[in-house]
Length: 132
Image (cartoon, rainbow, N blue to C red; front, side, top):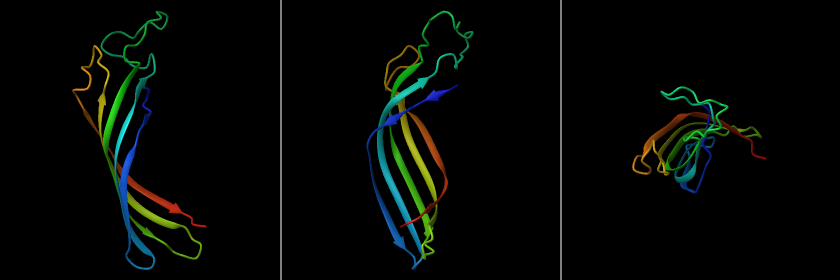
């Protein structure tokens, strides 16, 4: 299945950085977000219990595009090291993102906005920032 889901919208967040000593710091960022977008499934890449559609029939896939909305929370704590002397600042952190996602269009296969789905993203990141 090939899915394209572009989402756009505002986010509002806060961040804090605290030095532990001259070279080491901790930071945390938290943001809330709201986005709208489109779930776009390319034709002839999805099969259900029915046989695959005839590519020469000219019929439309009823699930090709569907509007969606989502809201959620993003949290990123990190620890960093500034070696000084023109060297890059290195940080190691965690990321957790929770999103509530909903199809907003009423379709035959889905009832619309009355069912929300949870989507989670989490992982570790490393960054190197050079200040000049």
